[in-house]
Image (tube, rainbow, N blue to C red; front, side):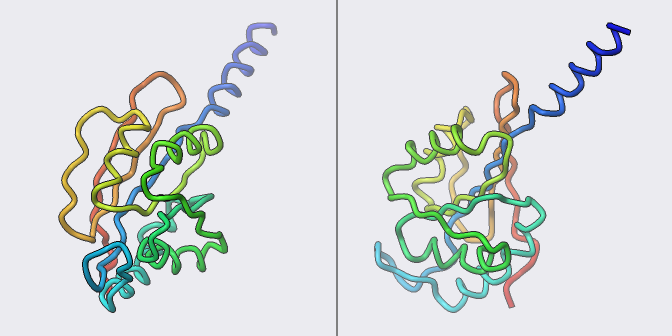
Length: 164
């Protein structure tokens, strides 16, 4: 009897410890170069198609940099989920990574950033190999952080649902 109780307890503990998932994506196409650029018409179409790809991850929180184009990219997903887009200051990616580790363990979140900031966040969350160069706007990366001591894994995905 004691053995069954102990086994049941260990199973419950194992079920309680879940991996954390962070989905990273670059903002959609922008109108021009520069910090103040917003999404282009093509970028708005891409952002409108993103929920079809990202809803299955069931995120509990959405984060975008303080640049308008990242917030615009997540706006359609935020509307579908009924979640606010939480803003982090560009240049504070390490602080955001700490926040994700502290408050979102065992949950899924989505972070929209920039081609030159996503790698720093992935690294700050423990992924060792170099982050791939970001050339387009049609990819996103899923970082899985196991509950135990195993290192995180990173999967690259292409947006399946194309903008119309």
